[in-house]
Image (cartoon, rainbow, N blue to C red; front, top):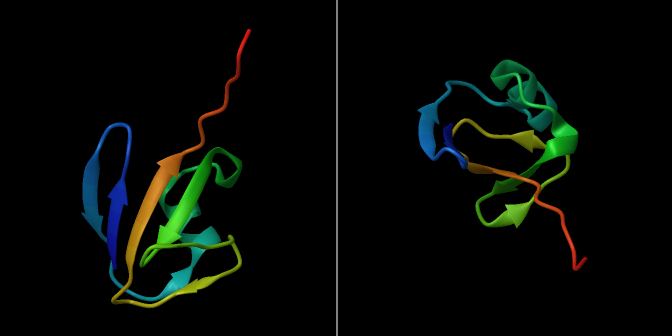
Length: 66
């Protein structure tokens, strides 16, 4: 599986199929702080990712007018 992490941008290859939550645990990433996008679609933490998936992990950014 190809993993593209943002902020800082880097790419990883992780073999095997697994759930989003297992992937985030392997990467030591808090699921509440990121969005996981697989093949262009936002996916929940209980989704299962295939070995050939292309996954993008983006940090959640919040803010507003002061």
